[in-house]
Image (cartoon, rainbow, N blue to C red; front, top):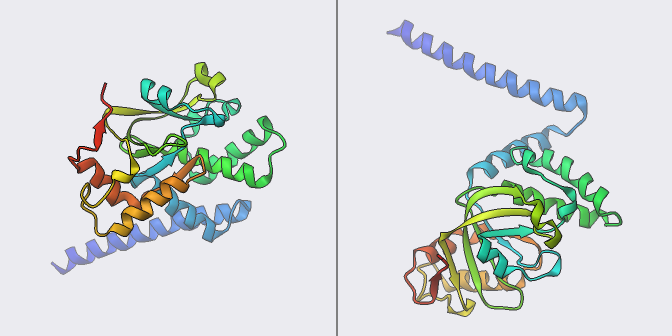
Length: 242
């Protein structure tokens, strides 16, 4: 029995050592090549793992390049963002967050000259998030100037549709209309509609949605509320199933 236990312990220790050597080798490679610090590398690894596993809840704008497109979104079961000139990014969807940034930033800089470094970083961030969206994630869309909210469940990941480039809608994600919802008036989201811990969560969600000015905003902290909306049978919630 002792020999068996000793053998198991030895195997476990050997496995841990091999994993440690592999991680150390990767870290040393990145350090030697000067691509990033050890801390940044470990943070990137953690972020990539979380990005691949966690369900995303994002708010998207409905006006690529300032043009309201919500009717086309709903008619075609897609959402889209602008900057079509940077081309198809499909081959980069599985890349790490940092690698996506390294590729996308210069593409935007090349095709949209004159942007500030802040704008370049912001737009690059939009694409990094957009490319990471996967089936099952939830996209919340509020058409500009309205109190309407669409809760769209992603059906398939990023695609580049060159036919929509002239409308600044080439970068697309398809959603499932059979699983997606619409609320005509944001004010109807109350404790009577959803079972959430407190009214403050609801009020914070409303404020966040109304104040969002970015193309893509993270709503992960409202995940329980959004899931409760999908589970609600409130008369104020409509299906967008065709």
